[in-house]
Image (cartoon, rainbow, N blue to C red; front, side):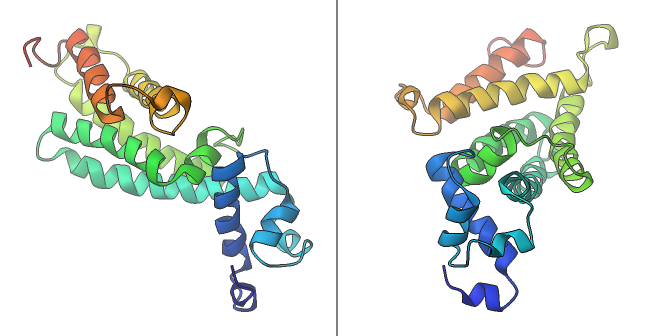
Length: 205
């Protein structure tokens, strides 16, 4: 990176970009503020003009990640078009695509220990992403009799947990990634089993 970013008032974002690279390479606890500063090509003291420490810097990465994540999920869901089921499946694929294309953001959001309610801005961005998943779950389960219908937040949490597990085991180049199926195939099959159990798709589909 170049110091030109600092001179033009972009030090904050330069540090975010450096942190994304370091998180992807070393994990959220594997680097120091001094390393982020070095990668951003600024002095070791410069980051403290914007962040109190590494945790606050990672929280900013998480915030930007949630905003990007929410945009991607909203685009994938497309207001439930062309069908509720198709839109729901698109959201699942978008989840995997985000984790694959933005590993630094993903780790900061879900694996760094930064709580979504750490700041009002972070909470708002996290809630916007979750709202897409909950809305998709609510729309898909609307035809289940109310007495048998799972709460939308629980429905969404089940799919999120499945997606996150697939990311961890099969989508990030870890030993478990050596599987005879792609992450997308695994998620599609898992979601299909879940939806059949709820009676939302035919057993022959």
